[in-house]
Image (cartoon, rainbow, N blue to C red; front, side, top):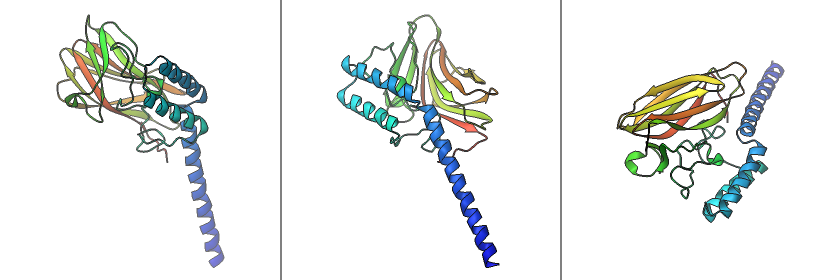
Length: 246
């Protein structure tokens, strides 16, 4: 009887260790997909050029360079929300705290290492916001202001799919002024959208995306349509139907 109990205990211990190892492998694989080596090398070159052109300070340059070199070495330990540092968040730079303050108002503040792609447009002023009444979390939010003929501008981010996920839930906080229109969309690998005018008080927006069969990644778009001004902050993207262990 005692031998049988020992065997059962050993089997449970081995099983638990296997689960832990599987979870760790899943985490490592997800990290590699979020930060592939070729992209890290590309960003290192971008940061070097920004420093040479005087677009970023010495302090910011050293911080970004150290982070990227640690990611290459596999020793980076994130201190902000990320997909591999719970609480889980698949969005990079979710509170728009990483930005470049030295470029023009119609240029990108969030470079690749900040996570977001921010196209330039002549009809909108895309800018970082630091007035407390227009910031939901942290020190900054993202602002879209129509300065000409109403059209569309926005930001986007590519996101790797999570194996087994039945969907993805995005939450963001938004507030607006004037004849604005917020449009959030899952595209190119997932489907789901939201489009409404946003009022002057902070509002939590929740949008669900359904993944396409076999998709390896999808794109998340946050658009400003029409006139007026929109502020967004504190984004969070979670997989549904699956749990990633730390």
